[in-house]
Image (cartoon, rainbow, N blue to C red; front, side, top):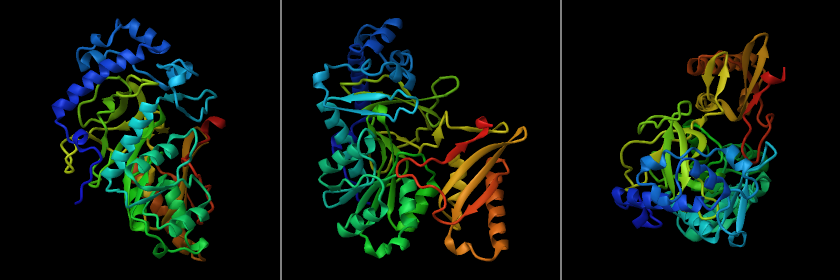
Length: 436
């Protein structure tokens, strides 16, 4: 298998040297953080007044966690560590609570982030011969500009298509012989469902790879996209607090995502006890920005659940791999006392060939009990006068789900195109229980 590197010396360096550099960077990170109003107070409370106070990783792990609410309380500039005139860009979350989380970037921050994306794309086999169509939203959302800059730095031709307007997306895929796309998995599934209606077939395209992210998805969803488009699909991970895309990325072997440990310090904790998890144990990912100048963040609780994969990857990269994100610790659904992650439901239904490309999970109250309703689109050919066939499929979906999640759901089958489509992150869960 052809293995590409962007900066080979940084990607295959000795593990001991990497960890030595991490500790040096942590000390510098603490010094930068002390320049912010928020961390100056936080670190003083635990007796840290200089990066030299961090003599080991264990010392660093005595620092309290940073959480999203801390970033909101610091709005607009309580986390800014450099003079404002040295800031060249900011990104912000959507601010669904009314107060967004704001991340400032210096020129070096943008350069370092861009290198991480170029490294990530090279790890999947991309080269300057490729054409990337970026179907992620541009603007305050990090997915658009982050991937755009990284692909350009690698030498790829980039089409800044942004999200939406499916017919135009398909025209560009064909007209410019696009080889790589960057999109949410749900939007790629939607694009496939619209091929016939817009008069396209797979023979019209030169597509080879897709980079997917921005929403948790199952391995079965990846396999479904690969099977439908006849391409390689690579999983990625990022969050705006850590820059955006390019925190972790799969390589050509697709055996977990390499988390770039020369840019981020990684911990896995039990989300309930906050104690460290042993390597291989599932828990919440905690990250620190080792290089960022403008908005340094220490021990950030991502709420994303994953685990560190043991052993080395065949590609030779020293950076450890994490499993795909199975969900968020605050996204877990409790249904009549049973814990269920939306990804468990997706894994079951996407494995079934009759199921289409869109679904919803609806939670309601039926008397004193919770009821879960799975609404899923199925292939057009299934909708005919044979109600018995539809009933059998509905029953089979329900039985498969009950086996997986120990809950008997109600299943509603829909024709293609009946459920809402989202151009950005798909909204899958609708919890109506508290509205009653």
